[in-house]
Length: 298
Image (tube, rainbow, N blue to C red; front, side, top):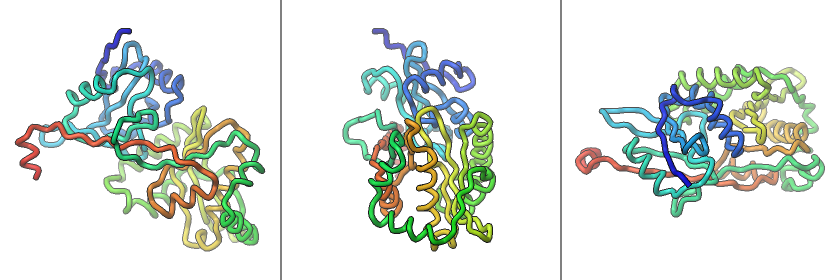
């Protein structure tokens, strides 16, 4: 079988063929041409033959050095499509970027790479079946929330979801700039036009926003991209209620609910309460800089 790897600048990529590869191999939404174009500072595509497989490389330049990085709101990338020897891919990448970090998707099982946690829940079951697999303390929290007269809102606002998420979490998101949030807002509004950005929120009887979730969607998954809870919401178990109502709404849909993380113990425990299972991805750090630059960095 022929193995021809091309390196194609993003502005020369055939977006239809690129997205067809993404859809054919059920790759995650971060691979979509539009997603990469809006969220990456710069990117190139490594393409096998006629888009039989693809590998996007997001990069920046500093002091004349080209290095890879992970853009904001992109959890994982890597190789998707027809398989070839990883060494061929690695050698090709190291000719393009000398240094950096790439989060490889769950299909890129390269030996000895550190794992990162990502929890997912199968929605291809009716709600009662999913609920029966909830942890007992989650069921207790939902009973507590039921006494709070919480209101589940299906037509919530994208801008509100992003602004609250930014206000609560921006200081913890190292390297995420105002420009990143602006681009993410553009992305969400673009996806909303095709029904692929969904926002759900929970408020109380006084119309106070308690918890809100912005979900992106493709043909296979819902992605819990931006989920925020106010101080009052935490006191009323509003986020437990919100996640449960979302799961109820989209149960029996033959989809996956992707919680989008996490290695943080508290967040990890929260996701596990819903019966979510870990679908790990992998952190590839590489340093192919000349020896004298490595020495200077030290």
